Each structure stands twice: as structure tokens, then as C-alpha cells.
Length: 352
Image (cartoon, rainbow, N blue to C red; front, side, top):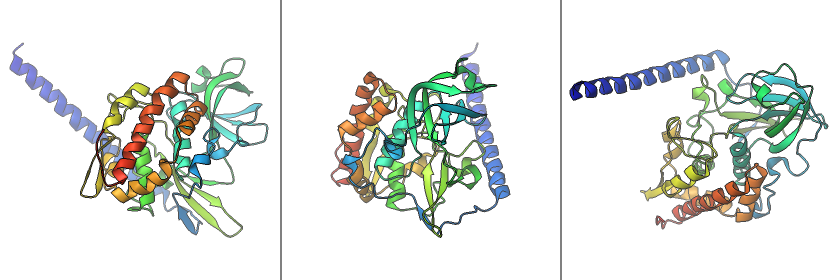
């Protein structure tokens, strides 16, 4: 075939792919806008809105137990309630021996999500109570669809993420969640710090309320502080796209990949220009997450992030079900990324 024709067909294919992807994205955005409009306003009763709280003595935090603490872990035996059809991974709800409800998930997000929750929590950000459970039994598991590959005929399972589902907390997901560019904290160091944590963990799956047609990964949890006071807490509820390569498409990005995570670490912080920190990160909402982060924002975050010890990082990795090899391979680039943030915040940025 004539080489010129090959180039023409290739160009047509590339343009067609771009046009198709753009049309699909526009349809998603339009449908998402319709869903948000149909849902109406959030029914919030909170008098206070928060995205961060002071974590206290960071170096003394229990990174094994995380937000739930040492006494919050799931208590067997577990009893099957129902299976969920939404989400990208198999998931069921169970009741534990203390009458607490848990959402149990399997798949390639289990390790990354457990670790990310612990790191975000240690820096003062709100996160759901999660635990890695290596093995167990879910009594009464039956009529399973996607989860039938995760729960054996004798009801045994392995390597699952347990996430607490507290009925006393009013949870606002999807249409009633929040967007990176539309929340009470836009422009604050607290929101910018959360964005840095997202990039540090290579979390490319940064969908928000605007992406509700595909599923938002942000939420608002309303907690009752007293009889008359409620607090709306803004958080990320899905950290599964972490600890691998960041990227703008399924070919370039990944999750729980020590080699890929280490390979991109030198590009994590790529410079400081005009008082803003420049990151190499690429995700589903790159501009919203990576731009506009000031030197003083990362300096503030490093006051907490920089106090996490190497032992705590390894504890959090071990508690997330990481193998000894994975713990060893993740610990070094994690520390390197944290120190890049420290140098950027010092105002004397020098690349490695």
C-alpha cells in the first residue's frame, strides 16, 4: 500500500478516536448535569463544614489501625446481608459480631485503598474507617453474582477491604457530593494540601460531582456532634486508583505497582515557579488537582506529612496487606516524594 495512504488512514483513525472520546465525555458531562439538577439541593443540616482537622502528634499515630483505632477492627463472625451491583469491584455488605455493618470489597484496589486512607488520615484529612482482612468466613453468603469468585462455596474469603458503614452518619454521595472547583474550601491551604496528598499517592481517579454519570469519588458525611450541632465533613471515598503510575488513560496509568510508582517519583515535584509548585502528575482532572498550589501550602502540609516516620509508613503498608517485598519497594519512593514536598516548601527547591 502507498505509504501516503497509510499515513492518511492513520490520521483519520487518530482524529476519529479523539472526536469519539470528546463526544462521549460531553455526553457524560451533560447527563451528569441533568442528574445533579434532578437531585435538587443537598439536605444538609450542618452548621459547620470541615475538610481537615489537626491530627495532633503525627509521629505517635497508630498507622496499623488507622482512623478506626485498635478497637475498631471488624469482629468475626461475619453474616451476609446483601451484594452490591455498583462499583468496579465485587462488593457485599456484612454484619459483624458487634452488630456493625461493613462493606467488603475485593480486587486490585484493596491494598492501595487501605494504605491511602491511613496516610490521608495521618495528615488530618477525613477518611473512612477501613481494615485489610487477610481471610475469614462470611456466613450465609448466597446467590452471589460478581462476588462468587471472591467467596468460596464454604463461605471463606481472602484479602478483602472492610469499610465501616455507620448508620448514624448521613452520607451524601454522587449527585450530592462535591467538586474540586465547587466546595467551601476553594483556594485554602487545606484543600490544596488534600490535592498534594492525592498526587503524592499517584491517585489518578479524581472524579468528582461533575463526573456523576461515571461515578463521583467525593462525598460529604454529616456527623452529629451533639443534640443541636452537626458537622459536614468533605472527603474522598475511593482511593483505589493509587500507588501505581498516574496517567490520563488506561494505557499509561495503574494501581499498586511499586515499579511504576518508583519510576515516576523523580517527576513528582518538577519545579517551583512564581511562588507555585509544579507537579508532574496527570489524572482524570489534572488542572483542578495540580494547578495553583502555593509554596506556603506545601510548607503547611509538610508540618504534618514530614512527621510521619519510616516505621509508620511501613506499618501502614503492612496493615494494607502489602508483601514484605512491596513494603520495601514502596517505602523508599514514598519518603523521596515527602522530601520533595519539604524542599519545595522551603523556598529553596533543588531537584534530586
